[in-house]
Length: 289
Length: 272
Image (cartoon, rainbow over all chains, first blue to last red; front, side, top):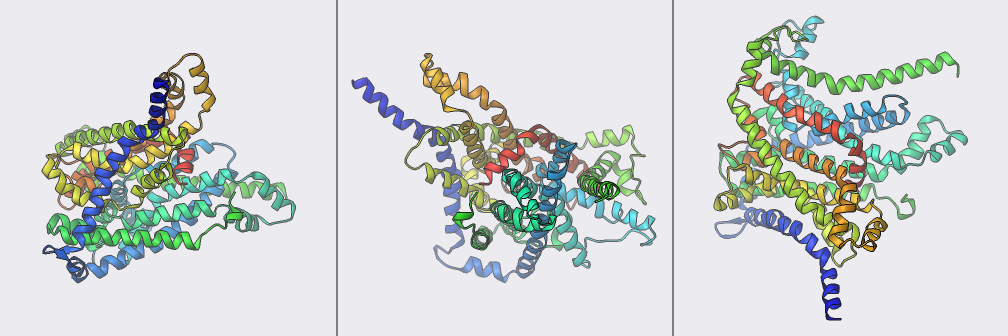
């Protein structure tokens, strides 16, 4: 009898014992640092203050960093979603070699932003492959720079192209996973009722994919606000973004308060974007699959 | 629709698929040229599109970039630690979520998801200070620990769905035949879940292998490959950078090859 009670208690405790190590790790290495950063950001000379945020906003590069970050997010994320949607639809119609195409298209998923930045640096540098092609076609007479302070437009385009090259794969995988859940009968039914392929896509597929699109948008936007190594590889100091400003404050200037203020700003932007997407792309309960 | 029309459409479609494949692969091929060609290729103009300068000297130059190989070692150490922690701590938590109904399960799930939503900067900055105090600063161990936080949500949620997919009845049958609770887990459930857990482990490894910001903030001399490449960006010759970038890419391509079958189910679940 006594043994059974002990056993029952032990059984009730089992899930908590299993969860405890992960929870401890996340408390020590996630929750505490998170609170420390927030405390650090709102504190100056031992009292509550917005001084760190004032220093941050007063930096000569702050406005550029804000504008650059938003420009890349607003240009790259919609392109990634559109391209990934197209690719997911193509996968549906592919009869042979689907496996290898999926593999090739998902390769960038495993490539770090730094490596991807270096890949495009190899293409876009003065003596790079793009200039070689343009030279062979007779469009330019010799090596030309695309990634300098004097060429802000091409530098922005280069970064957007790199982002589309690297991060479309993650959107594709999320959307393709969503497409797999859509029953084939839906498209067939639409077909029977005389819907054109385009109508089938916009009226049937897109609404059903809304939860996946929402997830992909949230994930990509949050990660795009954190963009860092790509920009450092392609633009260096010529293209300040929020994350590189954070890095400079922490590393070059050793101004931890301002670095924390940047981190809090990036967090606030991420949360804000997530809330916007959750609201705009809300799926009514009756439409849930 | 005529047959000719159909084949034409099919042709356009397949050309589109092929173009998108080239869009992914050609840039990787080009950085490989930059990496193995050495200085000669990097300075060549106009650039050759095949490895003409492929020579032993260039390859030796590539193998001898001391900083790169040392930092590869640190990267492997950090990523292995990240992988071990993520699986050792994440898989049990995933099993608890899959098999037990307990108070706080939803809260725990949300807490785990939350870690993924926060920018890495917000964690890395104070951890740098704490790690200095603990003697973990500037070591692959500190970097691996930090990265295990990033890998944890994937490890927990993916292993939860893996265990959920294994019928509870199998475990119960093992109990009836006299297996203890842990015995049934290790003899019946674990072997079935192993391929998925291996894929998750590889995934955790790559998360750490690829991470740049935290690794750069947490190290000074014992830099991992990403941190090393970031610091030498403005000063080292281009062929060194391309070599480093190419070394970064190779494991990633292999990783996708290994886990491609699990990729969609993994993401389908992890993104819910």
